[in-house]
Image 1 (cartoon, rainbow, N blue to C red):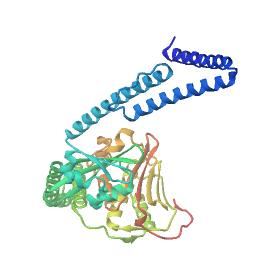
Image 2: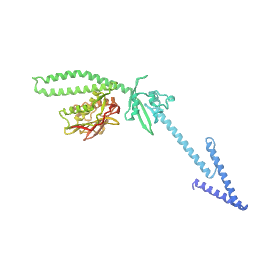
Image 3: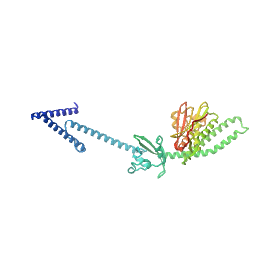
Image 4: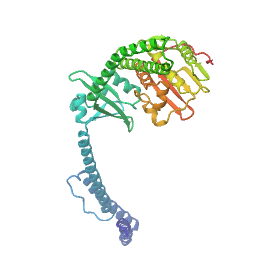
Length: 441
């Protein structure tokens, strides 16, 4: 029989014995009910005394030993002692785990900052304190935006899209570049990861300078070569057997000139810190011009449509927007067969303005989509060379959109076509009444 069952059995026997004894004594005194009442009062007094001893021990159990009580009360005290020991064991284990976690995070090469739902600092490791100049006694409980007042980081927090880290430059004290990425967890809590990427940024700057300088140096010789090739191709007495090689040389020279132009444009976009102008851009006129450019190509899709779901204008730098939209349309036209179709669409909603290019080309394998905006990255290098692609167009698109606060979204089905969509924030849209959809075909 279990100890608890035995204790309750003993308590029941004791209560029954008290009742019998009280009735017997009362019967001898010719008052059985009075004897029963006195016996129950005495039993209740004993129970209250045990309850008082148990309550006093619970209040002073940090230094007092548990009372020696049998029966049900002894079983209750034993259960409390076991629960207390189990709680103390789990508390010690939790403290050990917390110490191990603190030691492991302290050893991390990156900074870690824990923020609550109000973006107040709850905890940070030593590396975060060094990189962000945090003080454990003074900065705990403060909002992270009040300590790290970089505009890029403040916009990053407000946007709520933490998929990609933001890189900020700390020019005060030391010339340091920090990569900041937020990972949400729990009930609105945030984990801020801080990395020192100064070395990578300096290497990237050296690479950009080299590419820009090399492009500048190559542009003049290529211009001279292209001029001489054009002159030779127009020479009346040229051997007909040289016409083919000269044409191929001219084509490759033009391709190299286009690559150098794209490299210089990309370097300019990466290096400039100037604010983007907010001049209104007539998107309808721009798309009509892009449609004419596609139809002027020797090989173009059978159907080229422009769909305008809004007359709203886009606020930005028109040459840069034209370059970005033109790159997207040019890519779609290159990889769409002559019997296919291409559609350009512009619409506005509560999330801002959106421009998309949809084609019925070969599509893009899913594993390539995340890397499409890397410079010189091409899904099919052989086909790109045949069509004159440089692998720089989408990198230019990405930087133009970043300068305008936008982002690029790519959706593709292999063998069915692709859709490239540029999303612009509401502040980049000049309000205009919506009109009925218009199509050009």
